[in-house]
Length: 256
Image (cartoon, rainbow, N blue to C red; front, side, top):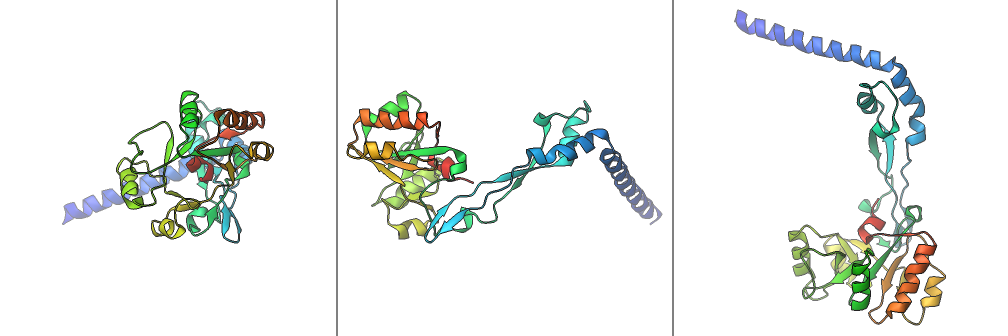
């Protein structure tokens, strides 16, 4: 019994000593010049989260923010005792209103603050080949006949007859982006599988290239029709580049 009390006492002493040491280290850190410098500069590096915007049945995704974790940043810098922004550590700040909690709403564009657009293609082989050969990121609507276990482009389930089968394939290879294009797939099917509902903001054809070219905005989700001539598609790309917009995968455009 004495041995038991001895071990309990030693354990208590160890825990108390550890707690006391941590408190001392915390006090010393808080009073250090480096800690004060990190604390006084943190607001310059914090980025506020942006909440999603809802307008009726539609939603524009928000943006995740970040906040400097002062203690973790201090621990990264204390060995050299010099403030260095590259060693800052951050905590994630989530939007108050998010697309994650509003999957019944339709996303028809990404957040304009991302300065990006997305391009979606179905079966326009000229456009697909051009994108692949020139490292242009794009999404392709796929079905059971053209789905791939891996590819240069991002694949979106577009099989109206075997949606579940294609979904299983995408999940098997961990390439399911949980996105459903309601211009193509029945909305109720999308809701059943709790996918994000997405609708094109623009559809490019050979007949509206001028209108589309003059109206491209950050956040646009652009579908390229199967019959679009490659020369018209290149005009679209030049305009996107001229406006200094990034072309990103659809999953990145609508992510927060």
